[in-house]
Image (cartoon, rainbow, N blue to C red; front, side):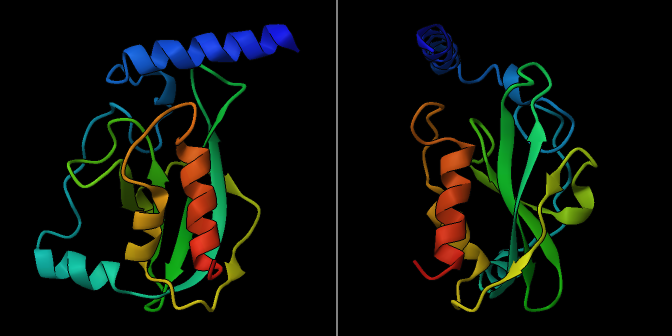
Length: 159
């Protein structure tokens, strides 16, 4: 157990020293140093409308990391009031000056993502609330994708 803890500590330290390399998250499914996509929504008003939509369902999703298969990258897939679905996830270098969370239309999700099934939520939380709950900063040891997705789920549940 001590060896595993030491290995995890060293892994986290390496990533923290060079967070822009993002080699640990490239698995062809959303963020972390890969090619950028053109944006589906090109106006500020379009983004505002999207972020103000209420969440109807939420599902915790994950995918394997290509170079570190024992770890999984995690996020949430949500269904909005209008029926559209989006993946919200956090990673080092994913976001811009507003934080390290990204919102991706689920039609851009790779087949590598899987989940246990969506559940209804009635908290009145919006997509923007979930992005904010994910947290602005990224730290692989104490504020990573797992922590962000957990906070998003809690926010969707009204906590």
